[in-house]
Image (tube, rainbow, N blue to C red; front, side):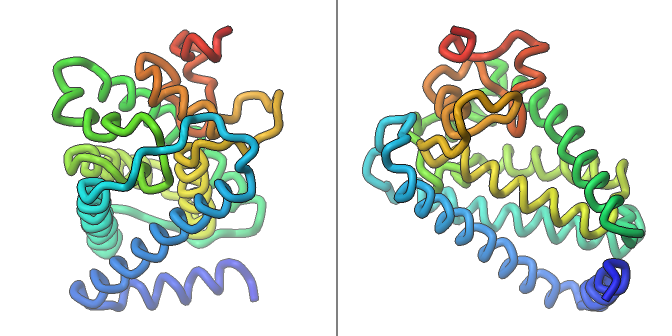
Length: 242
């Protein structure tokens, strides 16, 4: 079956849902994604125990679990708002012509979101806004996969709004968007495992070591998927510059 036919069926089913039913499905989707990140991160930690780049985390606290649960609800709310915008026509997602377009759409989203999240991440470390926006995430220097979801509600709303703005501007195909979201979840998980799955010497791409260094030295390493913008902005951590 052609990619466009599959996408057409998916879009038709999704947009035909009532708002309440859509909210339920999107909660389930976000929960499955969260569990996938946690499970995948645990497997990486087990498989790469000899390649640890951060000290083992402190014992899991109730606060972490509670905040991660609120993040799950917040990301579901953002996804639901995106669904409403899509249904109203404020956001357009196209049918993909072929595999080349899927790759180009995913690559464009990765490039734009990498730049946008680098810029907003640096802004989140600006002292006047850091306590309310990003300090909660940095309370945990010894990362674990759950740390990916330990975010303040303002941060969840901010990154969610950023994603919806980029999505509305790019108008990607369904498959390219899904590929990007899967890569985003993968990279977020890798960054919070405390182990390094990437071989030494891989250029540009960030990994477990890169983001673990950011938690230890918050004045650098603001990038998400690549360190390109940290190189251009001269914001790599002292350890990475060395």
